[in-house]
Length: 503
Image 1 (cartoon, rainbow, N blue to C red):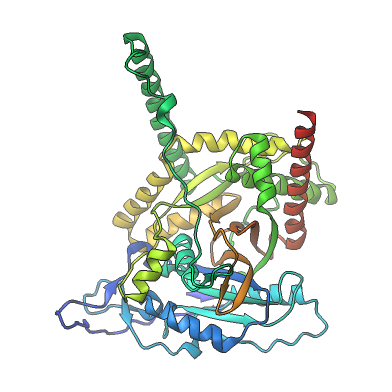
Image 2 (cartoon, rainbow, N blue to C red):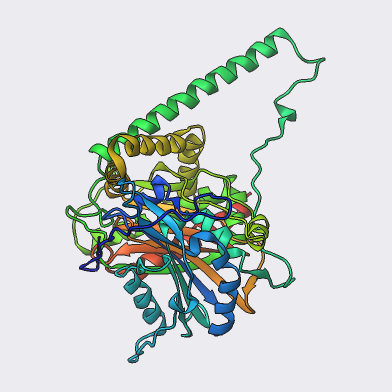
């Protein structure tokens, strides 16, 4: 592997099959998806950036991580090559963890640098390094530097082979307690898929042959539409992986792009209550509003870049899409996960993700709410499709017939061919703290993902944070793009207020 110009080689390690008292093998194989994250050019880390209201007391934070995280087998196991069977597969091998090897408190020379920029530069430097394979693949960085966002900042870096964002969020929250009740675990929003069926069913008195025929006709049409959308989405996914690339723009990756290039990070926090206000005014969802803000911000940035370069630009016919990463498996609740950790029960939650190809509208609308309406139109269609689930099985087919390298190539091509990678993670409803440290915000993001720009969205209490990661060669002024997200949000909110006044 290469990272930051340095080669990192996974040396094969001869291991024996560790048996427990019952004669069962303890060294478990990595799932194919987890091992895929070790392929060259697809060595992905999850970065959980957290801001705190008080300076971090390292010893107390260390003790909390020792008490909770190390009880999870994936945080206390090595990932090693198994040469015994000659399969080239990797295994989880339990090991003794020295917590001091994973807690990093760097001595940073400020040199009159703005503290916000100082923290951003440090996070950026993590995109050029790896965690040593001789220990479990995670570390915790403590920056006791006051910024405009928080009194202190920490970065939890975890290799993506350990788990996906949803699984890791639940595991991370098991270390926290609510501020209102220090004995209570955080709670996550519960989304019910059940709908009120009272409007869809008829009483026995109203059931007639014609009404039944009409109901079945509608259901049959919806079924046809559902499978048609699924087939289109699967073919689009395959076409993108093979040849269909987005139009050239300031966000598009260049030919010969290498993921080992240094990435830059920024994050912006806005009001979740205001997002819900916009949602209610436009009769949409929170996700529709978030996607609308993203489209508006990208449109502002692209038009400004082309205007500054004095080049003619027309968004008409511009092919611009987002590769939205979705979790396909229900995550264990925070309470359930915490209880299993306390009981020393092994809970294996790895990576189970699919992709949704979402069309982005790059335009300048006179009414900012049009960005939200455009998002709703596209998202409503995606909801009537099994495209995300099918992309997971397409990846599994590639894995079966072409091995880890073939599947990794497929996984690399899709983000490379699209403009934007995007993901969202639902955070806790209440304000929380860890080892007596109240949390200000959490901004999850990634390093090593083969795309030019990536946007993560995470909710926390009454806040919503956009975390933006970009290759510094593609987006040189990332903070300006972050400001565009805030400005776009404000314009959409003002437009929503005007609509309520007009009504």
